[in-house]
Image 1 (tube, rainbow, N blue to C red):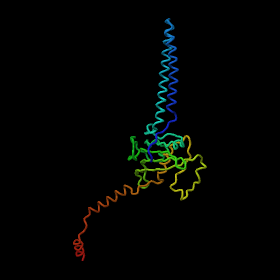
Image 2 (cartoon, one colour; image 1 turned 180 degrees about the horizontal axis):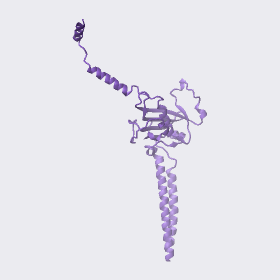
Image 3 (cartoon, one colour; image 1 turned 30 degrees about the vertical axis):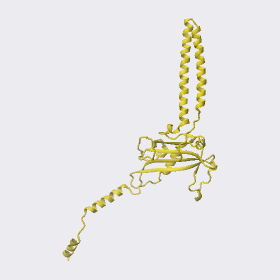
Image 4 (spheres, one colour; image 1 turned 45 degrees about the vertical axis):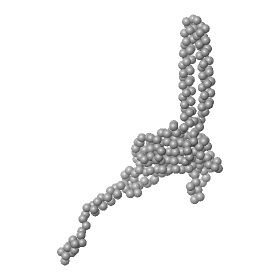
Length: 275
């Protein structure tokens, strides 16, 4: 997968700076007027009134500047690095075609307990500590994902989705716990309408081709990841060899090892006795 490409946010910092400058100019104008009144008036009443107006303008200034500062920080996060926001959270709802056009990349990890549809019918999943994962998780309870948007040479929008997890299932043969490792990568091709999906029948020529899905301005990446995990869960999960079978085989071998084999002379002795 190609290196991460810096993402662009919805709001530009330039617009935020311009808004900040206009707001600061208005506040400074109000403060200057109040200060002028404060200097000219020589009565106690007018002085107190001017002082009150000055304090009021200052409070407005602090609130307004705080709002602009928060907005600026938010815009900086969105424009510079989406991964910093969603590193330990489910991926967001995005404009799928814009995500692909910009070549954006999202990667992170989150708890499997955030996926209600996946957990239906599954045994209780353990709670794991979330950490920065550069490789597939080694313990159950964590889902790692990497989502990359890209444009092909023939101008098609695609999403490359990598999902890695370990799910705890119940073996239908021995009814014991079964840990299913999942490492699934799928390439999706975005289309505008359901009519562009084509027929449900898959030809041999279509094998290995990107799977077509309908993109939208409000595309749920988390739901896509959940669908990928659900497709990996077998209808009848079973161990290749159940642990109980292994234990029985081990016990049989151990018992056989304890029994002393008869020597050929002992066998001859028994035959002579019978004769």
